[in-house]
Image: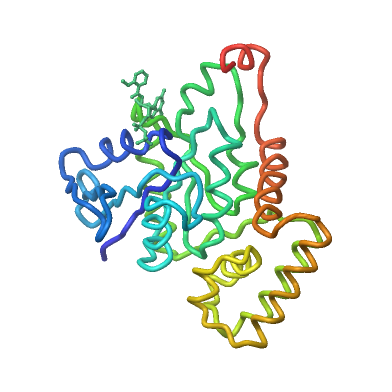
Length: 271
Ligand code: BGO
């Protein structure tokens, strides 16, 4: 059985470094079809049954840049067996913005808390189990630079892939937004694959044309979701996409609050 691992993360989180350590010299570099975005694939060193695809570095899975579209389409359409989401542990808030989207894709996910060596050097402490509770997936501390934790990371990824166990995030948004999302889930339920229901509901709430077109919703469902969106926009006095962005950052603030202890020394060194 072949296992396909996708490496996803922000630019500069250490993806290239990790990909190189994991694959050694067994890599193939090309382009994603139709775009000048680099595609790198390789076998896991010492185990040709594991294929690793290095996705372009992105901050979000919105469909705006070629990199975002490549990453998003690959994850949604090709459905790798497991996503290894690299997170720069010295910059949790920014990196978790992508993570909060990745864990809604209905796929197995393991978060690699990369740059853990720098976190320790700065005197800070990140609690992987606290992050894991909120994100609904395993979280493994790594240092791609020092080749620490990578063997364990691959073991966890392979187990998740074999079990086909998707991430089950437990963080939630404001009650008004959750109500709106539940109503949208009801409207689109019969048109969306079950594993992507939450993801699609969020995208439909945001009014994202790409997802709405792909779902081919009938006029009455379109009308209903549009009313739900308008009500939320009136309530929050903001557009739906901005509402979701703020909701994500609020959720992240809560997640990080419980999972990161900054030392006075760390504060000084990271500034
Ligand atoms: C430079 N720990 C530490 N400390 N550094 C890491 C780790 C880690 O776990 N992982 C990666 N890095 P990329 P993307 C650099 O290049 O893999 C470092 O964009 C430098 N270069 O070595 O490229 C890695 O593919 C000069 O750092 O990330 C690299 O995701 C001075 O993070 C950087 C200092 O890694 C980005 C660093 C000339």
